[in-house]
Image 1 (cartoon, rainbow, N blue to C red):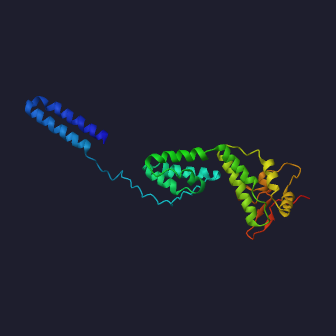
Image 2: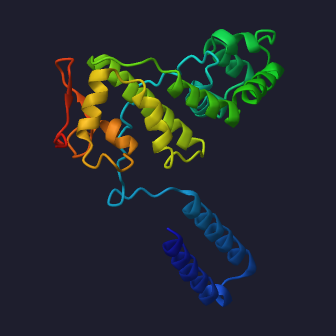
Image 3: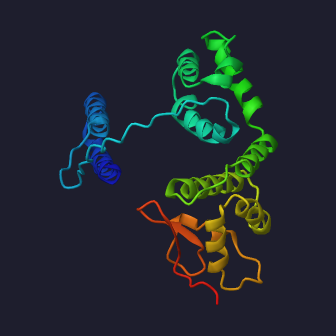
Length: 253
C-alpha cells in the first residue's frame, strides 16, 4: 500500500506541474484541493487483498488448571507460588478479586496467617507480601525437604511401600535442586539413610544387586531415576503384583 500510494502521489504531482501553467489560480486551487482529498481517502481506505489474506484458526480450548490449596507446608510453597503468581497475581484484575482468590486457596496455617486481613483493595498487597516473607525461606525449605527424607517410615516388601520411598526421595531431591542446592555429591549420605529404612528382604536384594560391592554405590542403584528398572545396576523395583523383585543385574557370586 505504501509503495502504490507513493507512486500515485508522484504521478499526480507530475500531472499538476504539467497543467499548472495552463490553469488560472482559481481552477488550480480547486484541482489541487480535489487531489489532496483523493490522496487522503486513498491513504485511509483499507484495501482487501484475498490473495494475501490468511485465516487464523480459533485457539484450541486448554484444560482448566486448578491451583492447589496451600496449607503452610514449606515443601508445597513453590508450586503454589508459581501457579498463583501467573494465574492470578499478574492478571489485569482488581486487588479485591486477587484477595478473594488468595483467601479461597489458603487453608490451615497459611489461612490463619492472613485471617486478620479483610478483603479490600489495600489488604491484598499486605497479604501477598506476608505469605512471601513467611514461606519464601530457602533455609527452612531445604531443612523441611531433608527432614522429609530422614523421617520417612521404614519400608516393607510391598509395592506401595517401596514406591512411596522412591517417589518421596526423588521429589525432595528435585525440589532441593530447584532452589539451587546441588545434591550430586549426596549419594553416600542418602544411601546410609535410605538403606536403614529397608526391611531385611529388601536389604539383601540390594546387596546382591551390586556388581562392585567394594565400591561406593550410587543413589540410582537403590532408587532408580524416572522409573528406570531395566538398566544394569538398578537394585530393586516393583512389579504390578505388589511384590519386590531384583532387577536385571545379576547377584554377585
